[in-house]
Image 1: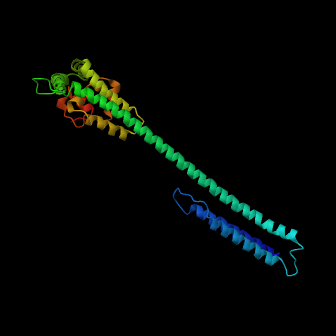
Image 2 (image 1 turned 30 degrees about the vertical axis):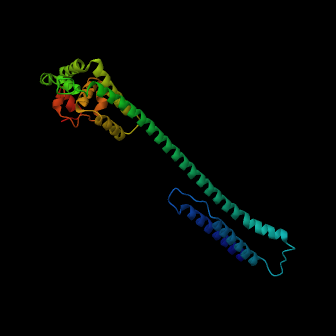
Image 3 (image 1 turned 180 degrees about the vertical axis):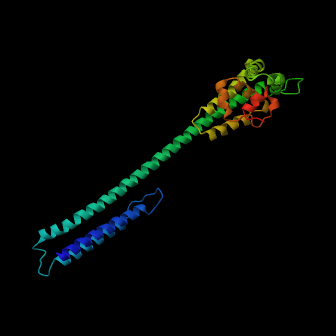
Length: 277
């Protein structure tokens, strides 16, 4: 009985060592690459287990024992020890295979999500640059040409007309000032040509602001819009956006007047609202 207990304890220790070793192979690498168990590792475990069985068989069987006359007992002995351990090893290998499949599925999902993100980015940029090109065509047509006999472009002349009443507007109370800013914007920029060009700029802004991009990326694309505009065009764009409460609030987050001076605007109120000096 004492020898049997030692044999069973030895078998349990061997099983625990195998489990720890196979678990260590799983935890060895910290990256996402999970490799299957090597055939050498599995073979070494099987060989070690076979040696343990031979060792136990040597302990329990005396010299007078004939294997040929007791094949049933030998089979029960070997099978009773082998089946649990081999089943355990098979389970560990199966779990490892499942882990590999799970990791590969996650990688595939990540790749697909990345491809989808790149596709959406390309589609967004394609639409963005088309809208931006449409604006530049309108701006070139209506604002960037210098009329014959004039010193400034049409866009600069529009801004000069817009700010003529600046001193009168700035001394008004807040409500009347905002109302007069709207009246001045409609009076000087309300014609069809100016409204069309400004509407193109507002379309670009609405497209960027309504996208699912982060605010940082939105500001980047909005900066591309500002880079494509002359200072006078930015002033007209900001002024027309100011008279619409919804657009005014949305545009404020982008601080479009940060690089402009207040004297270009119809009122200091407009420039200060959008982060100007």
